[in-house]
Amino acid sequence: MKAAPLGELPLDDLLGLLAHLPGPPDIARWQHLAKSTPTYWYRLMQPWVCLGILHHAKDEPWPTSTRREVLVDLAFGVEDWVADAALFALVTAAYREPDLRPQVRQLVRARLDAAVAANRLVTIEESLAQLMIVTPGCRQDDRALATAVLARAAQDDEEDDEPAPVAKRRWWQRDS
Image (cartoon, rainbow, N blue to C red):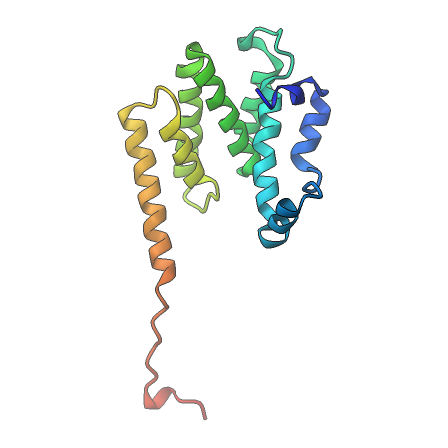
């Protein structure tokens, strides 16, 4: 409910905030965080803005609402934190409104399926898998896919931690 006042902002302002977030407040802990982990502030704020979009024009019926249309468009837009934040807002809506659960589950699954099928690095794939697991109505096959994505990510992290093998140089390969 703390994001509800954001929903009173014009939609253009909310969308603008997703790309042009203000800096952190002039409070010591936020300033420290902004210096030590600069992306954290933005990663924290974008879900709040999407929750604001979730509260935008609440009088419109959900199926044809601007808020639903915008969040779905953002969720299936560029593979970035905004897409992830939009899905987070949709998952939040599904927790609050049980009638939305099947549709939101399908949206999260479709986005996760697209990330897995991309055959390239999708930076939000792990986050999408985590969202799938916490989505109300998550089925066993959804959970199995999400768990496989997370296991693969953990394995990739372990492989990245291992030093690369040093190739032995033979006497005929030495520098002259």
